[in-house]
Length: 383
Image (cartoon, rainbow, N blue to C red; front, side, top):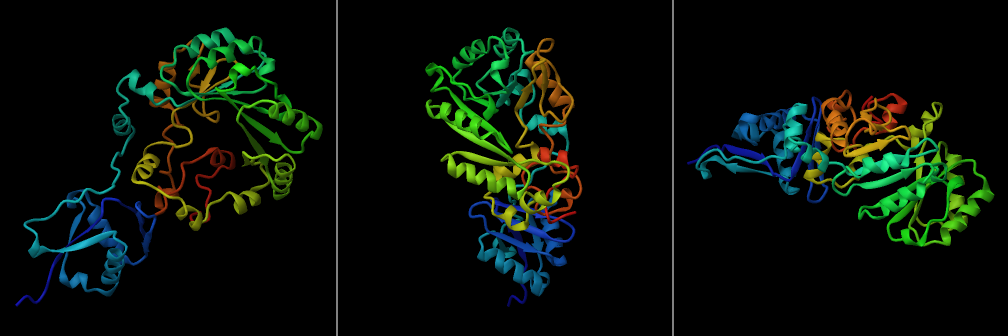
């Protein structure tokens, strides 16, 4: 007569495991349900299961299984369809489970994963080109460079386009591209565009408070007289700014808008109350396995983006050194430098305190706010 039963223990391949010294988090990517534990016995069990040699399956003796903390955890795990146990006697051998476990430990492995093996593959990752223009921009040389960019990245024209000579030449050139195109400018610099551009361009209008009400009315009317999609970006640095922006949104019947927090150096309390993440904020975001892998491999805000400044300097992120100049380097060389030496595209949450937190890969990638504030994380969980 069987007196004791030993088991194989595993989790399902669609469940992501975040594990730290003091706690563990399981996230079901099918329904967003989570399971957390700070019990040492449970943490140790999951550490064992995640070891490469165990291939996602670990032996669970009858004695260990009947420890109350282990048994309660596994019971809840099974109720939430996150994992299971199998009697050893019912298995011909040790099973193997494919776990959603990211295992690229260095830059070269990440490049290999993303097929960074040729210029052609590298350039496929270009998703957005922001073109900053002013009176010093050489439009003809800029267009010559843009012609060399393969694929269909989106283009974003940033600044007061009226300052650039022959700006209409740039617009006509971009109008021939099937990719999305934005014009990002202040409400002070809105100009009417030709009807020929209506199906290919959209506006992103920045509003910095306090405003010139007459100028806002004037620019709003220009935009209403056209059929271009428009989104307003309100820069806010305080609750008063937020309230003023909301009043303007209602007064002008603005449908598409964002409130963009701005760090001024002395409004950290505003950020702590309105921007820093709480546990509930982090868990409220729906995640797929692909999302988890992406956040372990790349910066979801910066990856694939290049900024071109009026003097031709090219940046992946304006907070880091230039990658080259479009008048002297090719797009291939610029992208290659970001891959080899850059700090932007692959900036992830692998620094303390994030690398000691079970929510490490649920949080969005580090943003420009972390750079401005001088902190590696903006949350109320780890300090």
